[in-house]
Image (cartoon, one colour):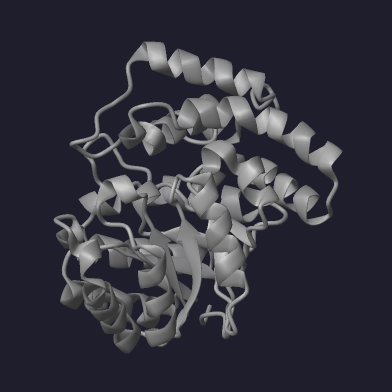
Length: 321
């Protein structure tokens, strides 16, 4: 499908997972099955690929192109596809952006380059140059991925405002600042701009509280497993049905507490194991340096899914295929 023209990033946008075979090759059949599962969820407004949840750090440019091609073939006629742009160099980021635009993506999720980790936030012109390179390579809406300050690849509020002014193609922020006070300030400030920039929450471990502050959507790896609950929560908050929202959050809470436990590097590893426990995937393989979870943690995941009421609901289709 051709890209969705004038796509505005908002609503429930799961970041999908990328299955691998035992030899670490991309399991294309399993990925297609996963895509079908996610886009079938009522309330999903788009999906994201070539991002943290697909282990983009461990995928070559050619693999990222293949992943996008599969995504468009399997899901592009049903939902807009957001493609990640994750690169340390702006020239490579531009190459990825160009590939994604040519491949049919409707928007780009632009990761901060780790080359900025050594104090780059003190030179906002570096962030501007990176986003300008991406914007010049692809005529698509951009989503700025905002990292926490402790990572040293974050963008201070004034830098973000400068980015919005100098790169008007930025239409949304995936806010992972980790600070509720800053998060609320971002929502109030960015939504009030003459050219509003939507705040999409990725505070998945406290999503209910985050959405209550006024986010216009969410972009979350947990959506690879619980997109239905996230969509129900978002709809309840939008409708100001707080009783319903609290009830949904009570189901979400045990799952996200398990997914986002320390170390955070294992969050998508845990989601892969959850899909196996739910019968939606046959195996959970991650590429090094990630390694398989110990059985004790898999059992904790099982208990969390049971507490969320997710096990035993007819989730054995893939396992039986």
